[in-house]
Amino acid sequence: MQGPGIFLIQFLGPEAPFNTLEGLAGWCADLGFKGVQVPTFRKDIFDLALAAHSKSYCDDIKGMLADKGLQITELSTHRQGHICAFNPAFDHMLRNFGPPELADKPQERKLWAREQLMLAARAAGNLGLKTHASFCGNLLWPYFYPYPPPPPGLIDAGFTELARVWRPILDAFDEQGVDVCFEIHPGEDVHDGVTFEMFLDKLGGHPRCNILYDPSHMLLQHIDYAGFIDVYHERIKAFHVKDAEFIPSARCGVYGGFQRWGNRPGRFRSLGDGQIDFGAIFSRLAYHGYAGWAVLEWECYLKRSEDGAREAVPFINDHMIAVTRTAFDAFMTDAADDATNRKLLGLTPT
Image 1 (cartoon, rainbow, N blue to C red):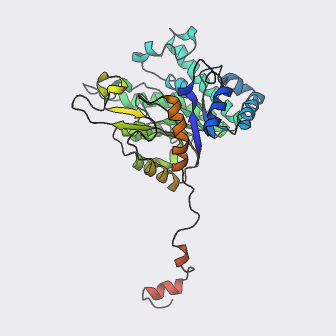
Image 2: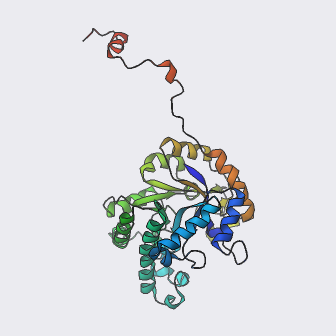
Image 3: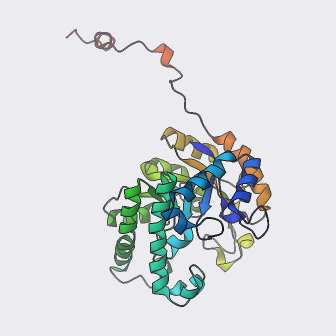
């Protein structure tokens, strides 16, 4: 496992050092981070189109980061991926998730987002990356807990369309040797293990369809987030280290009662301030040979972001596990010997 990394999106700001990639990189390096997950929806931070077409631009970015002791963990197209396929119910709220000239053109906005993902595949290839972080979209989210039940075939149709949209994108990433890691996230059609399986099945088990594992979204859904690793470890290729808590309430529950974050029973917290057992998570990932990055995603309703970032470096470092090369009891074991084994079992020699 590599780390600690940091997802830059929550730290973008209008003032230095948070308004340029170089400024953010210097700030992250000073805190002790080793990698940065880079959002791609702001040209002034990272020019996605230029990165797709210019290897020299990518080399310059890599060189600037390397000079500060950093590297890119993944590019992120969470925002663009979210609007690759979205339900019309969300159109007005997504008007700004794209160029201003497409604010009132939802179909054109979707096509723009899909082209952004194609550019991201080429950019990731030019940067020499192996993984990419994104969302899948939310065609079906208005029906996640419906009354009355959805008509027969609606869910199947939604995942069929989602797969139709993403298959050529995944093929483009495959050409670059890059895994697309979909964040398992409420608000997206792929929001738990079952929905990931439905998506993957429609994609025919596409090898580039993988998981960005974030335990905070699982704790808030009451999913066994450590057991999830045992089930899906072969597809977990990216990891957001984010904490959360769920404080049972007599007034509302998992769905939050339309409350602001601070009033919900389930809330995101800075690392170490929530309820997630990161010892179990890092152990399970290490056991299954996870070789990707451990990347902080800071989303806390209470603590200042700069403090959350500073505290995350020792927290992640303290939880990362260098896997032992030998079993602790290896010195007690003789070399393999079939004759001895048969004797111990009381069997006659062969």
